[in-house]
Image (cartoon, rainbow, N blue to C red; front, side, top):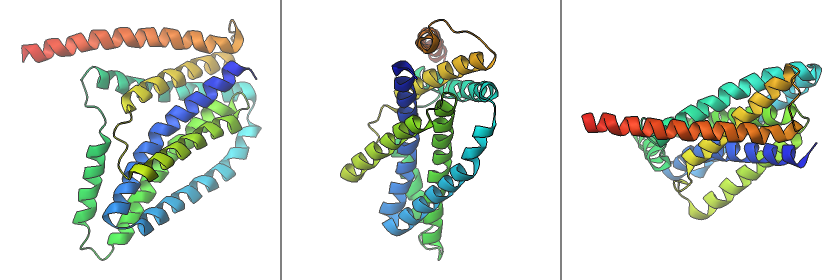
Length: 248
């Protein structure tokens, strides 16, 4: 276990979890301010309880899988997961798709909850909105923690990074009582996409028996190559987007 592996694991887990927790917090806050904190907290805690149960049930099963198979499977999943984040971040950075707006997401959820206000099930529906938001984003956090931590036996370290993200978001949210719209979410997703893809390539290689030069330091090399490729892609696609706009 090297400092490179520890630092990269904590950073990837923290940044990825931070993005997911911000998105869940936006919905929970909309529920709390539109209805009340009761359905918001009930939905949140119900989702967290289900996530804990899933981890307790399925977590021990990973110990039964041979390490190389685990590295290959998780590495492949991380490549797919990381490339999805990276693709969206590149397209948002170049203007082909709109940037994610937490204020807009908050307003949309608030409007939906207000339309449901006359329904006798309004509190239940509000609680379900919080439950679904926390569960969906939480599943991604659990996957990220397991993916970046399991292959090298650093699940606890990855979990600490995710927990740190939760604490930071909740602390800031408790102070401002507003959607965290100032968070540079696309930049974070760009960084996370790069890191998860680099991890995925490294562990897929290890699962196939590759002998990486420099061991864990190879992750930094992969990260640099992916960052350079992404920079070129952004420049080319941004120029193409400008040409399309000028032609219209």
